[in-house]
Image 1 (cartoon, rainbow, N blue to C red):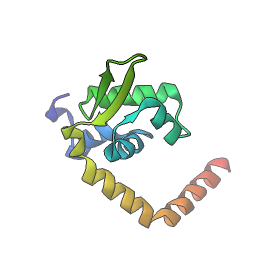
Image 2 (image 1 turned 90 degrees about the horizontal axis):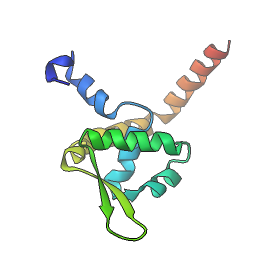
Image 3 (image 1 turned 45 degrees about the horizontal axis):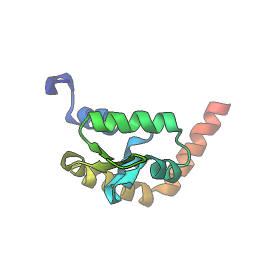
Length: 118
């Protein structure tokens, strides 16, 4: 996509890290490189299929890189690229904001669920 294809700069950011799992994956990878299985165990609710899709998208967008070690059996790790590290302040700010507002967010989620069920 060209820069002119986004109405607002935030749209470009959301395009790269939006969705249910990408920020969570990035939180783990910003700490240290991880293997797929480690991420799968750490993010209990994500399916293997979705994890693989999200990792491929993040890799395709240059946010993470896939490192294959020439071992038997092959070992694959994912780590954040320099471009991906530039998102650290955003991810950290989102985590901090979520922590500070967790009760309010939980209440809003319960209200939304109640309205949808009615």
